[in-house]
Image 1 (cartoon, rainbow, N blue to C red):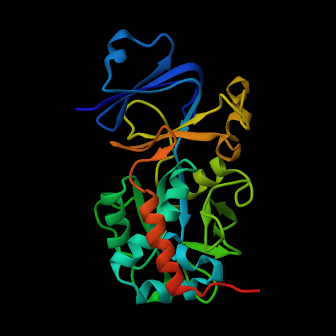
Image 2: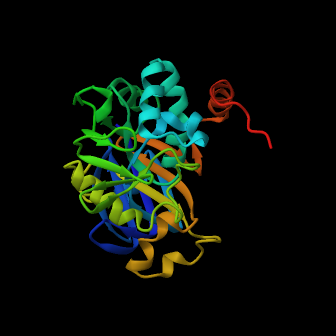
Image 3: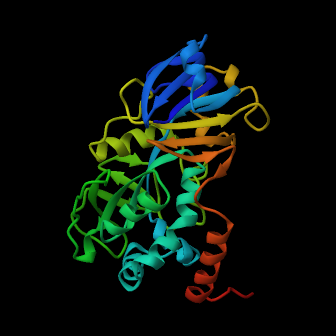
Length: 298
């Protein structure tokens, strides 16, 4: 049994705004949330994380073409990405996904809906890396989305060179359901959730969860942990813990350093370092990209 105590200058539960708060986790679920003082029995937790100058918020959900990372500089259309998925084996797709998964995790994303053809890729990433994953199957692939236990969701998606009836549509690198913009990243230069590709990650993440019929992110007792802890003790987000609720929701794009990311029983990021995706993976993806995409010359 693993107990984790996380403390911070601010805890935003998704519904409430607590100053000098704490979150106590037991075996991947939230056991208690409150304001200081921390009950004495919680101070004997297996792990104690956070501290003053930290902001604790729910993890985001994002939809991304993570496996296309090595070919993203070619700005592939959805049809082009589908051909890449179909021509690659599972081992290649796992390797090629790791940098994008890293970027998303370091942006506070705990649930990633992966564009792909079969459930094997998101399931294997969940096993190897940790976190929560779903599947978005392009309609032009001819593959029916297949939900299996372990997936967050299984949906269809349409886009350039891959048109058809789908639950989500890609337009100019962004996902939409009807008129609602979803938190999504397709084939861009960066998979990081930033001001450049998302005006309001919190609101767009809520819309994505609604589109997937997933519950909204919340830090409250009984819920599976999806928690991001940001360090706002130094610039560029210094003093953000003194702000109000509206400003706190800008934490995801504030440039604040992500210190900890927790998804269920998995601590994915600790002291600002990813625990499962490391430099050797980036080097392997670079070698793969050099085979797939000729180096550009002037």
